[in-house]
Image (cartoon, rainbow over all chains, first blue to last red; front, side, top):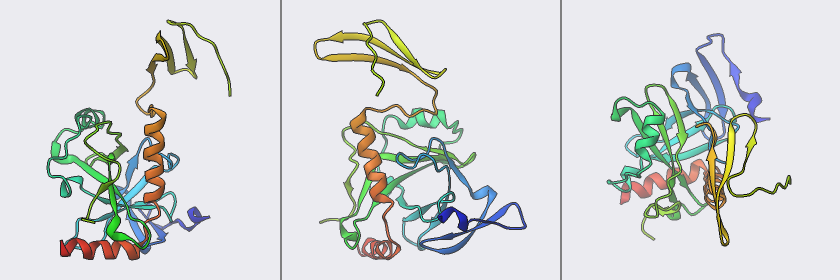
Length: 156
Length: 76
């Protein structure tokens, strides 16, 4: 089982995880993001960490800590639509007890068809919202017809 | 599947903290009221399935494709 690859290090604040995409990573307790409820389809997993893909690109990995081979590519949706502002964001912000708007991280999950990266899409209907202060987050469901769950990222 | 018959105005509980009430029956449509804790996801089935399916597909992302994506992004 993938979860067996999680090793608790002698320092309780750090543990290492053998991931599918990045080999072994070390995670400090203060880097862990808790998604509650978990992502739809993966509701049993709650602990994640954000990892930069490469410098100077807006892509991040949302790596699950409870299942080593589970990771999502994410992007700030405002890199795609600068005025991305679903109506339900305000309520989500209150639910997550965000005090300062700068503490609210919004991430759209990307779907990259294997071997066809040009056709990748961003899910603007199900952004992950995170309070960076408390590191609590959830997947917000946006029922706003102007935002697609398959928003094309690159021109066809 | 558990099947229950309810009239307009009647309800049911799922556990201690989820309550569903039949508010109105009009022709082929039924209005339901749902009271549930914030930690419970309540969605129309078609929306739930769409997001779940998208999450499952997104989880298939491979590092090699993401590297190419990053390169394509820089070219744009």
